[in-house]
Length: 105
Image (cartoon, rainbow, N blue to C red; front, side, top):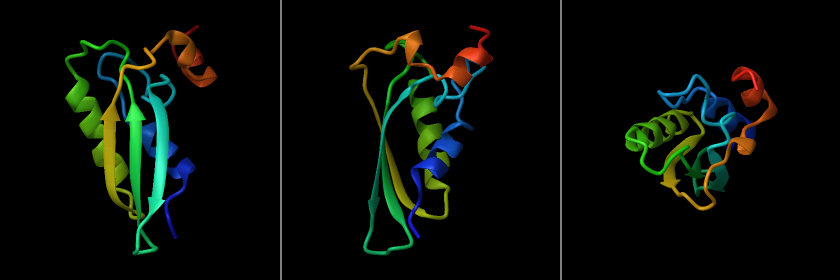
């Protein structure tokens, strides 16, 4: 059985920007999740496109690596790849309702 988008989102909610008290999913940093089944039908490859709150974030590699490691740790995932992009630029209105609530907005 291949991994579901919901399971990936659950793991993304465990990845945090060290400078923010909120996870990357609820912060709105995840732009795309692509799941591809492999020839081994029990495993999937996962490609994630994400951004950061600012292009000059000194924690960029740490955050991207954390996302990759956690997604790849799922039993149903063979490999995970994370691509950072700054198009479109992140804006606070990209946060989920839960994210706004967590930040008291």
